[in-house]
Length: 336
Ligand SMILES: Nc1ncnc2c1ncn2[C@@H]1O[C@H](COP(=O)(O)OP(=O)(O)OP(=O)(O)O)[C@@H](O)[C@H]1O
Ligand SMILES: [Mg+2]
Image (tube, rainbow, N blue to C red; front, side, top):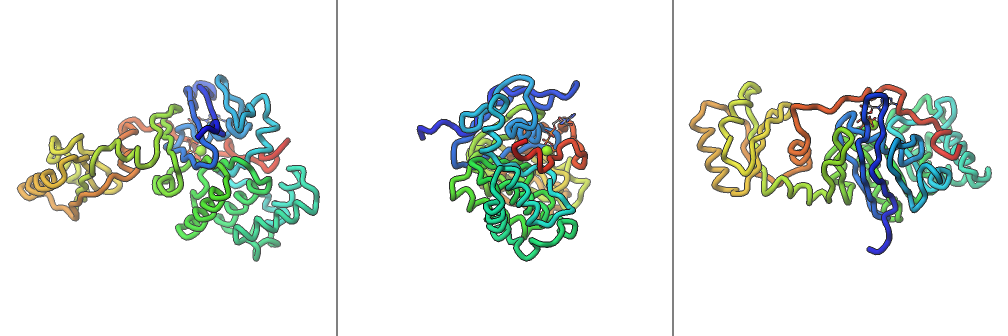
């Protein structure tokens, strides 16, 4: 590939008072690919998205979209990107169609063109039947789809989506994934943030993991999984109270330390020697009085990668998901 990356960021730093949201972030995204930006609450995902979409200036560092600097050539950048923010930015007192036409007009389209594109986008996002209802009456999923639609009106070269499927039901999420596939097939470059590892696995060509304002890993989903090394032995405990004992029991058996996943009531262990480790683990469990529900060997998932990469005892500072600080208005989205 001789094309230069369509998105580049170099040494981005951004602080809010004493909170360092980005502590020197580098990033490259190749044209026509999907980058999944993964990180826990407060990791810095939205801050990076806002810098790349010209809504926020970095304290230090540079970023470019298709060669245009996000600070010096903000206007050019805005004409090339579409942004679907973390919180749907649609006007409730207008209909779906009116919202999209408004955004089209803000992009500088003529009335007729804005109407045509709005109709096209409503069809694609299967909102046509609700197009002339006030957004007030839309469900959460419909609002998100409309918001996504608004980001597509300008036919962007680069689409930036901040947690596009958070809060959507599984059916709607799968619909949206299919739609994203189509956009990528048509050549759109996509940067999406997500907290769903399954989503990153399904959509992303490359994944960047951000933790406390720093990129701690990048690679394709399979490269990242290989970092866990070999396979994963998973033991599901029948009793919640036995997790610690299981960790002790399995210590030293695998190619790395066992990790307890409290929510999943399970312990996972990276293994390189599949069968002998499985036997040894089964024997130890049998000799103990620990009751288990399941014992299995599987390929590593991105969950395992994430658990292994992010230090468990030191949670990232959490953001407040409902705070309006991340909200984008329809006006912020396009050329001001
Ligand atoms: N406008 C702001 N004022 C003050 N602090 C902010 C502001 N924006 C972000 N922060 C802080 O910067 C850090 C990174 O926030 P950011 O919103 O980028 O995280 P995130 O990865 O998007 O989190 P989430 O998954 O919760 O959306 C957090 O500690 C957050 O509280
Ligand atoms: Mg965010």
